[in-house]
Length: 336
Image 1: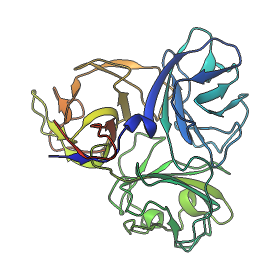
Image 2: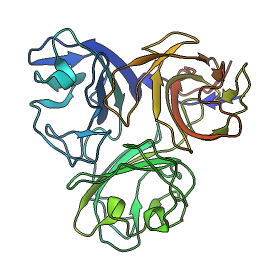
Image 3: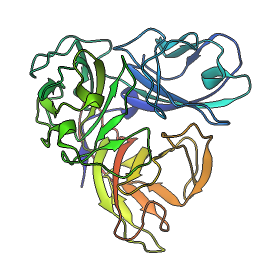
């Protein structure tokens, strides 16, 4: 039986669907000013655009390639209840449909964290929801960086914002990593996470250029599990036609998954599909939304209804956010 003390998950993470109109505008409905948002046009081939408050301004990065942060598509920034947008088709084309995923960190840039051997420029932390972002400058030598969560993160994404570089993903195994911008299998380099698991205060880096080149600037997105709200880890497929079951203790609303063998990243959410046939997007490509994934978000997990994301003996890494079982005044609720 799972419990949660997060009263309303939508105050920390949510999904917003909207239609573009081709005119400069403010899109509202998030319910808070996002510190990190991720927008994708659903209806045609446009990039996944990620924005964070640490870099701020109109800077974005696409998850499907190695580009540094850029501000060349007009106004693209957070607003008090959503986003301020210009007219670019990647995020506001006339009659195009879009999805935005939104996270609350510390409500701004935060301050320097000095827990690691590298002092961060900014660390913005939401300990309630287990999410933080840290901006740091690489040293080129083995190092640690403070994340501020107070518990060890189970999923970390690091991206160089000052130069080109891959999106490096930690998924729980400090000897391996994924690249969010590629569909490749896991790779093993001790120069990435220094073969060292994160602690309650820091995560470790080797000298790999995608996480720690001297003088370059990076953003680390760190996620820790919160019972009844989020879950990260791995599972092994069983290949059964009736499918596997992944227990979460809550009804999922957002699911990012990657097979450890070569296979595309898959991203689904409860706003863009319907039970037993989910629409999905692929973060490592610019492709439009596809449909027909045979699994179901149920009250306490994900029921796979075939071999999709369920190949026999295959290992899958995942991160899930959910519809929290609401309690009042931080009184825990039980999963149903």
